[in-house]
Image (cartoon, rainbow, N blue to C red; front, side, top):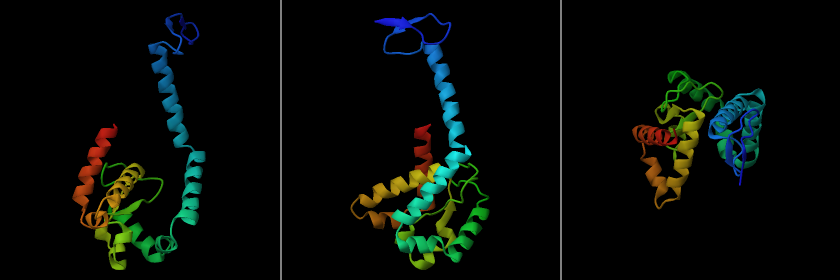
Amino acid sequence: MVHECGESGCHKIIPINQRYCPQHQAQHEAEWQAKKNSYRRSKLAQAIKVEKAKQYDMNKRDEQASAFYHSKQWQRVRDYVYSRDLATCQVCGNVVKNRKIVDHIVPRRLCTPEQALDSSNLWTLCYKCHFRKTKLEQIISRQSNGSNKLKHLDRTFWTKVLREKRGNKQ
């Protein structure tokens, strides 16, 4: 079974399970991607992200972590690291605009209180790199002796792995 392309004025015959011919399919796909990307950058999308972050802080993050991330000491160290790294992701080099994402290289839950505020254990990451690192940390922590492994992974390891993962996604 076949039909004409759904694009106005195009009379190419295509299979019934497709809406557009390959030429117009590519055009509509590009338009959809542009629309999707503009939505991600819209004020509404940013407001939704902020609201989700607030809900996470209120409902899912444990009280000790919430108290730490709202403390004056953390905010001071975070601002210092953010400016030290020139508001640039230390993995991919993108400028971090929306949020100050300063990540613990060795996860905070595995650090002593002094290490949690040590600037040598902190770096600035963009949202995507931070998301990837968090997912990898979760995978590693589920392995046998995972917490011990995470304690010994350094900045060089994470940079290499995250750049490889980033390369695979593109």
